[in-house]
Amino acid sequence: MRLIVVFLMLMVSPILSAAERVKVLTSFSILADITRNIGGAEIELTNLVGPDSDAHLYETTPDDARRVAAADLIIVNGLNFEPWLDRLATSTGANGKVVQASQGVIPRTLEEDGQQIPDPHAWNNLANAKIYAGNIAKALARVDPAHAERYRANLEAYLSQIDALLIETRERFGGLPAGSHRIVTSHDAFGYLGQAYGIDFIAPQGLSTEHEPSAREVADLIGLIRSEGIKAVFVENIKDARLLEQIADETGARIGGTLYSDALASEGPASAYLGLYRHNVETITRALARR
Image 1 (cartoon, rainbow, N blue to C red):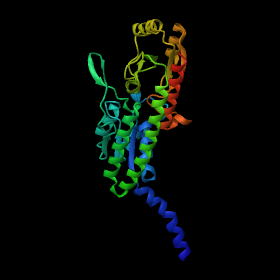
Image 2 (cartoon, helix red, strand yellow):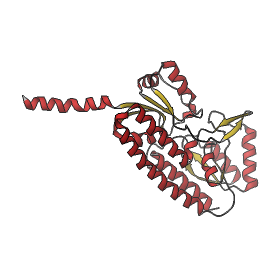
Image 3 (cartoon, helix red, strand yellow):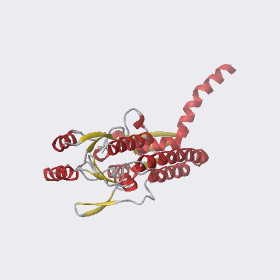
């Protein structure tokens, strides 16, 4: 009889443990990976916009509404990156605490349609990624104080990895030939990276992939590539590559590789945020070194 009781306790224990974990919902895959590194086994993580998917164009589903309503903590990027999630949280009457991972970031701004708007792609600067991780750790500790020390320890370990990658990134960009570096990407997602390392990123689309470039804008970009002698253009994992391939064909610029802008890869090293960042840095510096 005692063996039966012990067996039943062993069977029930994992279920109870899983039920006690804090329910965390993230808006897109990059945030999900950072959150997973901080939360570890103490959280039950649900993510909405998956790898290789475009959060700018995401359309919510009834299942998403149920996930939002069930979450104890909702982690968003902020900076108007995912307004669809704000609307979803309001419409479902979500009780979970909503936290903006970008809180405290100094945003760069761009003019679009006559208005100054913040660039939401702040994770493309590793210094901002440290702010993201810190905000996520604090939010987890507030909703789940029993595991606050674990979250802080995970945060310190993750920040150490970011610091190591920062050193590697500075060395790679510091080793490039002196002078201005201009490269072309699909949409304006890498401004924070360019700001940090003196790279001028040019794109046929603005901050959001929602707005398709006009024929005039594409023609102007082609003229700029020719006049400036820009040698490489980069496609993105969330974008159809045909426009960039057309631009490369017409200008003689080469395709420098694939960059991961707003989403992780489905597999491989770029399926984690730090792997994604390292891949982008290696791909860009390799192309610029060949100029």
